[in-house]
Amino acid sequence: MERITSFCVDHDKIKKGIYISRIDGDITTYDLRTRFPNGGDYMDNLTMHSVEHMFATYVRNSAIGNSVIYFGPMGCRTGFYLLVRETPQEVVLQVVKDVLGKIVSHDGEMFGQSRKECGNYRELDLAAAKIECAAYLSVLEQSDNTFVYPN
Image 1 (cartoon, rainbow, N blue to C red):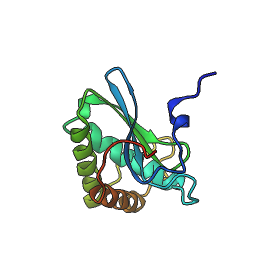
Image 2 (image 1 turned 90 degrees about the vertical axis):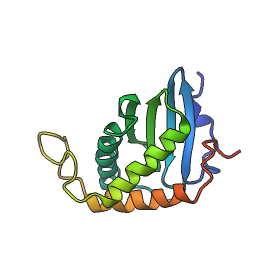
Image 3 (image 1 turned 180 degrees about the vertical axis):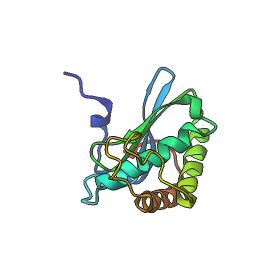
Image 4 (image 1 turned 135 degrees about the horizontal axis):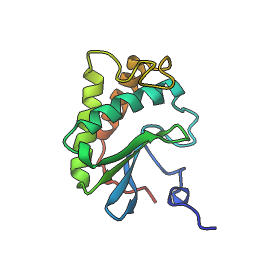
């Protein structure tokens, strides 16, 4: 059986950053790596869930909102996947940074934090999302962001 693309990357070399994981026709899958793989420091479910609610809402209401296919956490708890249709990578990077900044400065309620809106609405924490997003924004602002996995 053929290995999937994400299993072909040496995870011991991946650093925090943004990468193009794969391109399928007009859809690009971005790897938003917020933690070092196999580093022992993994996101807890509360943080992942909280970032997912905030980031998904803001990115779907951004300039590229109509091009967003999916945003969600990686099962390994070291980052998120963002799938976008027909959008230049430089634009995606700027929107990701803008969204992270909006989450960090968000002054209001957590998006989707009600029983009717979410299947686990009690496990959300805006402060946790802000901490994770501030740390990741700092990484992106201090990186070259080549979108290419390290060899």
